Amino acid sequence: MKKTLSVILIISFLIPTLSGCKKSQPSSSKTQDVELVMYGLFDDSDIYEPLIQEYESSHTNVNITYKQFTDPETYIDLVVNELAEGEGPDIFAMHNSWIYKHEKKVSPYEISIEKAKEFEETFVSVVTDDFLRSNTGEDGKIVSYKMLGLPMYVDSIALYYNEDQFEDAIPSQGKPSNTWTEIIEDVYKLTKSDNSFERFELAGISMGRSDNILRTMDILYTLFLQYEVDFYNDDYTESTITSTEVSTSTSLITKPAEEALELYTSFAVPSSKNYCWNEYISDAESAEKEMKAFIEGKVSMIFGYSYVYEDLLDLIETESKKGTDTIDQDVIKVAEIPQLYDPETSTDKRNVYASYFAYTVSRTSEYPEEAWEFLDYLTSKEVEEYYFEETHKPSSRRDLLEDQMQDPIYGVFAEEAGYAETIPMADSFKYAEIFSEAIDSVLATIKASTAIKTAEEQINAIMPEDGL
Image 1 (spheres, rainbow, N blue to C red):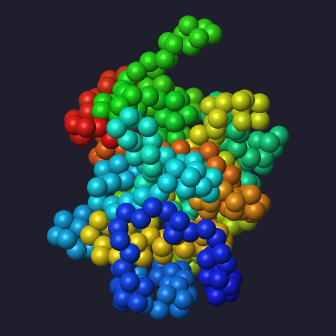
Image 2 (cartoon, rainbow, N blue to C red; image 1 turned 30 degrees about the vertical axis):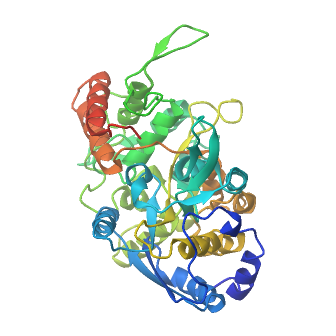
């Protein structure tokens, strides 16, 4: 524990809270005993126990029980089934890609236009996009807003790289390039082919396949954002990923989704200049996948979230005890996600796909107001400072990111939180299956245009009739 939580608690309630917002349900008596059950994913209970204890000490009628889960698919199925039975948790973790499918399972908190502005000023923009909705009057004008969730962090993928391998192969820069065009050149210089079963002594980057890379979808979604793919029509009732764009300056017609898919898969196409990844380098059935190749020095760059750094250190320790030759942990560095255009010279907005969990209140909760009050506390400045120190996940609050950007490892993720974006999805698990199939199709020599057209048809088949 790096902060005195009693101090955190006192300070947090000096900050304006939801008490000034319009209440969607009548408040229960402050003397009535309130039992709140909270479901979370991945975070150990040790993180929340001190927070819960301190909160309960000043809310003597409130008792909070935290339950940890580790498998997202079984977890959300459990939550959905329990809520359907009128049971389930009062508070549960909702991934930002799930909210568009499961919004009706939430007990929203109604807030005024003024409070919505405070919300936008407090949290990074992707949180507003994902978890704030407007209410309109009969004249179509916005009259209020509703909050659907409050996140303690916002994460995104960045580029983990082996500094020694860059110093050896590209001493003129010693780190990954800023753009995808230059990354291709980096990969060409880093990659070393041989006659081994894997065909490579060293792979430049883990990209191109759907089966043996941990963050395939997150990389592809990032490319879709960077290529400015139009995922849907204006009213979000139909997928339009096959749409084309015409350059106003050159009149050239581009197909963003196809280009993004072609770039991603090019690293696994043997005829490509930047070919460096195949089915043998990383075990598709293992939990570690490309991380093991990275700590063994067999790949120079991999993609991962903020928590991957600790995972890599743990894996080095585990494999070293087995007698496996591993890289020194000091050579592991992190760089921001590459962009289409150089951020140092381009005025184009940077893009990366955001992936994070927000806590929300279930529609079956008997105490929605008390639940929202606790979530307001969890996302206060002081508590999020504590959470960053414990987990190293970049804060969802704007006022904490500048300090977090100074961290030599985790600062990259804090930097990306400011420009991370979302992609609304009708069903994130099915989207992953659809785009995995598209990747596999291209690697099986199907044209990218055909793969994207098929993906569009599959998405439209699962789109809700009234849209997202």
